[in-house]
Image 1 (tube, rainbow, N blue to C red):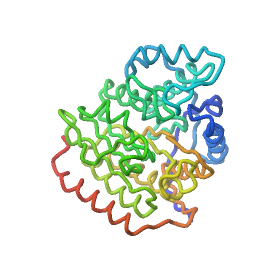
Image 2: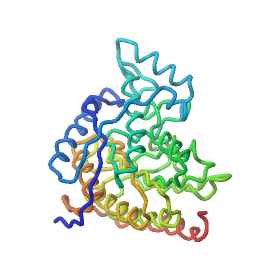
Image 3: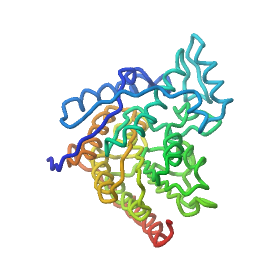
Image 4: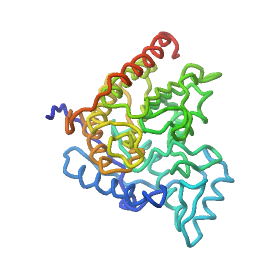
Length: 344
């Protein structure tokens, strides 16, 4: 089933994307293949425009990363072998630093081109785990933090909606005390990587009340995800000029890092909702492909993009879990109860 109202979409693309992965060696090939498969799927669409990124400069990265980390990455990038930047997840490989500059440059290119496109998608991006001084979780640096920082410098009012299966700890850490709206929907039991995302963490200082962690019980299904998306009401109240979306698809039921039980339908619904929300707010969208490590990754990315363009699809049989849905409903209700007047 398809229902469409149609919008154009700018996609940041470089052929090098097909070969870039900072994931563990056991899943690097899977991580790479979803980018290539997505490219083939999206190529058949009309009103899609592919735009080449310009690599970032070293100085751009210093905006959100410590120089000691960048020096370390640059050093290991010159080594002739593959190794790890952290305790065993995030790889380094020969020539890696040039790829990092391309990834960061994709964000800066998207920001520049958002003057001409209401909606831009970066399939390779959304590295939200890295902190200022530490690479982690397949994320050598944090391009989401770079986007937020640069947009704020440009005078934009920024909101982040992050639905990757893993909590955006690196973003929360950097902007916890800043009035940047941060909405996270992710798998959570207090232990699942990265172990952060306590719903009681709502911000501090100037950022008090701007942090929303909607942790889904592990194994949550489409009905829970749909319930969680009610939290987008906070974005409506915040009224951003730019809406950043990390649309990670590693919550798909067939993902190799199994955590949630979602179908492609959930990602299409996300695309539709943020697209309609941005249109009501007259906000621009810059979105990332986030994580994804299974056969459902590329179709889920494609379904999300279809949603961004206004096409409603239903490609898989919806999943349900009433008990988990009831928990998510209570959690979102609690967040929305404190909403009126809390976002300046």
